[in-house]
Image 1 (cartoon, rainbow, N blue to C red):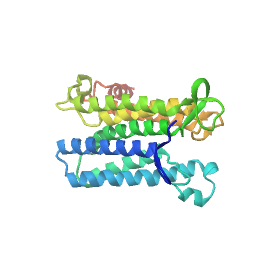
Image 2: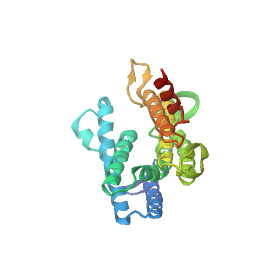
Image 3: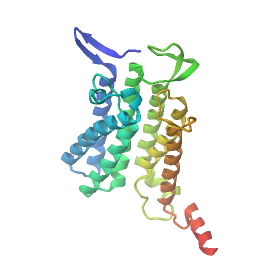
Image 4: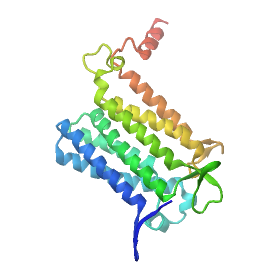
Length: 270
């Protein structure tokens, strides 16, 4: 592990902060470029990006405190984010997505189009966030015989951040390609004259659900477990996959030929 990138006297520059800053900068470029291609106002694009970033940190910290009360403990530890760091990425990302959709509506932008662009930018942030987390050594998984020895641990652990890096790279590649080419997917466009926006962001949701299905079982510092056995992340992942899959199917251009259309037809006949 390499948590401190540079140390000059009392000044320390941490690997996670540097990697996250790089990811946020590159993501901002993607966000700006995609928004410019859609002819969105550039000032509003920057405003939306930085406001969503603030929302992520504030709500993500609040979510971490509420979900890890046994580790945080006191009010002082909750507020001292530099001394006692910790942000729940999922809660922060969910809050940022909700904000950016509301922000898009306030600017008369197509929310689905904005969500697709945001999914691409967010995937880039997660790539570098995973690299920073791996260097920081702050996210060990469950004990295994073939894993990595984390600082302060006595057993090899699954490197959860390595999984995040791989997942983010694959997700970025898929979401970027889908956003560019969804209009040419005959199965999605169907009989409509134009394919609907939103496929890229919904694919990101499916990928996120798959990640939670896996990480719920291997993350040492995960959320609570229902009945002491089933990780809450696993349940959340299943729900997210089902909801996003349903929305994808609903947005397919062949309304009557879609699975949902057939089911409605059978119900009406009965």
